Amino acid sequence: AQTIHQWPVAEIKAVGSPLSLGCTIKGKSSPNLYWYWQATGGTLQQLFYSITVGQVESVVQLNLSASRPKDDQFILSTEKLLLSHSGFYLCAWSLNWGDDTQYFGPGTRLLVL
Amino acid sequence: QQQVRQSPQSLTVWEGETAILNCSYEDSTFNYFPWYQQFPGEGPALLISISSVSDKKEDGRFTIFFNKREKKLSLHITDSQPGDSATYFCAASENTNTGKLTFGDGTVLTVKP
Image (cartoon, rainbow over all chains, first blue to last red; front, side, top):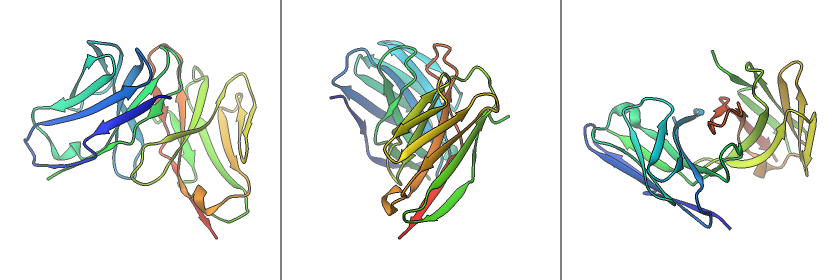
């Protein structure tokens, strides 16, 4: 069975500080991976997607970047946090390219002060 | 222009009643519609999905009705239970090999015992 793990569970960071969030998928080789952002009480906005190691596509520009250093790992980062970065960050995976069923991780809660 | 719309924004039903959650979309290229259930502080979980070739999909107490001509869907939850209290998101896929899911704003369902 596939499992998805996100770290950290929660973060409180200062404006202007750097950030790195991680996501790991176990039990599935070469998954498609996605990063989403969700404002409190809001909808889900897809940020990035990746179909293979080293390849990441940006969906929206939020002064964030993403990388896929390993087949099972997806990293979201920024060098300088903004207040607007606060929210819930979700990693998701799907089985095959074009397979529209996506499965979400437990999320990371980020508060920027 | 919002691509996927959900109504009502919030819904309260009594235990045992049927909850009806509505979803509509703009883009006629959408052909896959998953519904996600999200509890506070957790990632969304896939509940049930339907493709545009079907007009109904049933899974236990959860049923999707799909009207392609009117670009509308509805999720029916029969015999609602307090444990069904959550936010429900309707999503739509363009199926253009981008892995992009467009989410509605969600419906907050409260089931009173």
